[in-house]
Structure formats: C-alpha cells, structure tokens
Image (cartoon, rainbow, N blue to C red; front, top):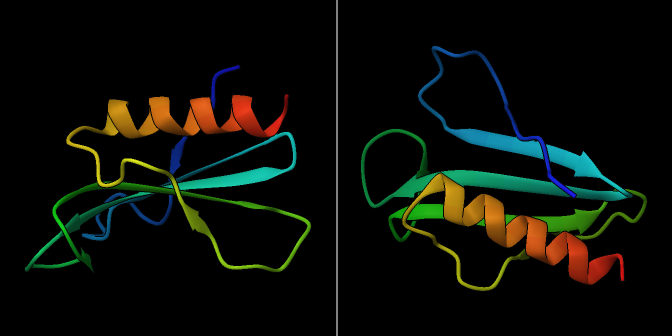
Amino acid sequence: MALHFSRVGPATEELEIWSAIERGFSFVISNESRDGPGVHGKPGFVASWRPIDINKPAIRVGGSPFKTFAEAETACEAMLAHLTR
C-alpha cells in the first residue's frame, strides 16, 4: 500500500511540504531546518498523520525527523499499515 506524496504549493516556494491521503488518513512530510526559509525545527524530514474526518491536531510519526524523504515516506507507509489493520 504505497502512499503517493505530492508537493504542496508552487514549485518556486521555499517551503517544502508534501502530502498524501489514503484510506481516511492524511499524511504530511515537511523538510525542517534550524534557520533559513521554511519550517524551523530539528533538521530533517518530519512526518505526521491525522484522520481526515476528525478535526484533531496531527500526530508526529515516531522517528521524526528522518535523514531522507524516503525514510519519512517509509515510516508513513508503516503507520498507515498499522492504522488500517
């Protein structure tokens, strides 16, 4: 069950955020850094999820931030498998 992430916003925007929706859940991956443009935090790719039909804050995927986008994507896919068992 592969999630298909799409970049949010225009390609020229300096903020790096990707999202995917699958089986009633929304997943977001953001690229964070300590300084510069975009989301500030511990450097790396932070993954989070939330149910799309319940208005609640997102929950960070364990292990975030990840060193690579691929690691964050794999963690989201594992979380989706866990949530839909």
